[in-house]
Structure formats: C-alpha cells, structure tokens
Amino acid sequence: MSTVRDMIHKKGSEIFSIAPDATVFEALTVMAKNNAGALMVVRGGKVEGIISERDCVRKVDLEGRSVKATKVHEIMTSKVIYVEAGQQLEECMALMIDKNIRHLPVYDDKELLGLISVRDVLKEVVDVQKFMISQLEHYITGGGR
Image 1 (cartoon, one colour):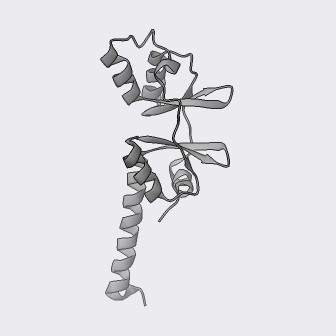
Image 2: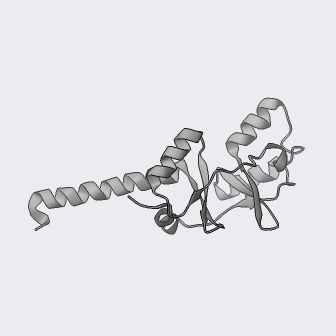
C-alpha cells in the first residue's frame, strides 16, 4: 500500500494557512478561494492550530457568534493531530475514523509537508485497489506470463 509521501507527491503539497488573529470570515474567504476545507493556523512560520469549515459552523454559527467578529484563534483546534510522511495510508484512514477528523497535516522530520483530507486518502486507496485488480486480471487472463 502507498505511503502518505507517495500521495502528497501525486496530489501536490500546497498548504493554505491563516494567521490566528485573522477573523473567521477571512478564513472562510481563503477556504472558498482555494476550494479548501481546512487551513493551517500559522504565526511566524510555526503551526499553532488548524481550522476547518466544520469548526466554523459548529463554533460560530451554532453558538450565535459573528464570523466577522470572531478570531480564528478563538475557535481553532490547537492540539493538532498529524501524521508522518512515511506512514501507510491505512494508518491515516484508521486515525481519521478513530478521531473523527477530516484533515491531517503531514510532517517530514518536523517540516510541514502538506495537508491531506479524508477524500484524498479515500481516492488514493481506491486508485491503488483498482491498479491491483487490473494487475490480477492481467495475470489471470494470461498476460502475466
């Protein structure tokens, strides 16, 4: 099975981020502009947290707050769960399911390499399985000799 590093190389490693003192409205604008479901919260090159669309809905709208008055640091998740680039995709899926999270930062020796979503992981797992099925079919029909 593939590693997270393999997947990052295929999908790209662009990371979208926002400052902790930005407003939630600004964060949502960056997410919408980049078609991203989450942003890393970064100050001075250091990751301080992560904010997702889900955070915005649950911690702003449902609590009656204003997106233009609420700061990112007020609703972000500061204890960020992450994976290492060398980990297997199955481990990522299990972690996402266990922790009920949709986005995982990927580190490679303390360097932020990228951000993956549950959709990214699912797509990669399906692609790998399709390839394996194709190879087995090729072998079974005599193309493997």
